[in-house]
Length: 108
Image (tube, rainbow, N blue to C red):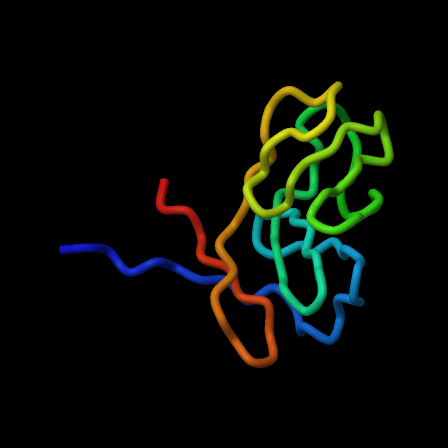
């Protein structure tokens, strides 16, 4: 029997401007929420290389550049695009909802 995924509502879609990212803090999570042409993505907010906040970085298409050291990640899968980052950033599955950004919480 498969355990149902636990979900978490982060914010209203209207709170995330097109082509930008915002920080969302819920429970013990600090996340970056991105809007790319009306499609939403969520990653951990903390850069894996240093103390940078990805929600304060520079978003271009599906790539976020950390404003601290300039490393880049693909927000669709968390993979490193540009060093000095070496470790992928954690991504979260966005659950379809008409008004809110809702994510599936990992079942660790």
